[in-house]
Amino acid sequence: MPVVKYRKWFFALSLILVGLSIYGIFTYKFNFSVDFKGGSITEVRYEGELPTQTSIEEAVHKLSLGGISVRPSESDRYIIRTRELTPEESNTLLSSLPQAGGVAPTVERSNTVGPIAGAELKSKAVKAVAVVVIMIVLYITFAFRKVSDPVSSWKYGLATVIALVHDVIVPTGIFVFLGHFYGFEIDLLFVSGLLAILGYSVHDTIVVFDRVRENLKVNRIRHTVENFEETVGKSITQTLGRSINTSLTIFITLIFLYFLGSSATHDFALLLIIGVIAGTYSSIFLASPLLVTFYKLQKK
Image 1 (cartoon, rainbow, N blue to C red):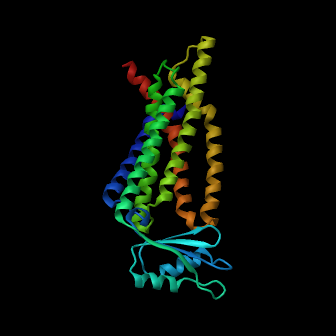
Image 2 (image 1 turned 135 degrees about the horizontal axis):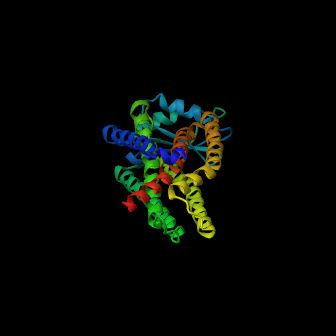
Image 3 (image 1 turned 120 degrees about the vertical axis):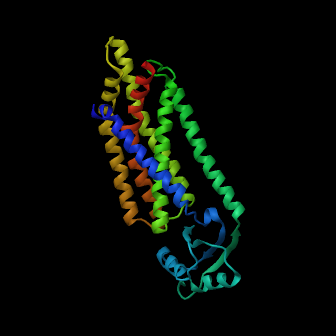
């Protein structure tokens, strides 16, 4: 199987992508939204026909308030997040919003999220990602606990961790570059997207690992002598079509969501598109070939 045979080339590509991502993270930093930096939250309610989200965003953008976030809430209101506003700026914001049937919107809520609350959200976001990764590793180790020959079960977990780190760092690095050059922001939806990517990636990886386990079991039952490298290569080949078809289905859906969906989910869809590509790549070209590398290292 070429994937296993030329695994060093794929490892090198992953290292380059991760290296560039880390460089971007430390060089350009994160362009955090008001979800993390703190700012003002204004919730407005409309009577009658609700204006489009695009019209709300265009009206707020004209005020030059920096990074903003406009999201629909329930069926008759919008939540607008901006930097911390003065009372005069809040009044200007309200008067600039489009009306519905000649009636101005009503302010349902107007408060300020301080930097302390933003720092707490950052901490919780990091902890959420860390907890998910730890639980995934524990599950992989438990699920493959009976597979100790020729590679120990914990090494399946280690390969999964490396793949998950790859799948988190690469999309994050790309968004850091997009944030620096095009103004993309890191918000709570971004964290939700990363958690979704982790779930998708580990699911794809488990499919390949499970086929490796089944092939090892069949070899033992049939007393077939087969090199572990061949077993892994055969397992990748057997699951390749399923992995690509599944990823392609999700990819097409996300493409439609990106181009035809609401602007509120625009960045979220883009993140998932990048994550699906990275997750599919890592499950086929990174996680499984790592098992062969671990096998060869323990034989030395």
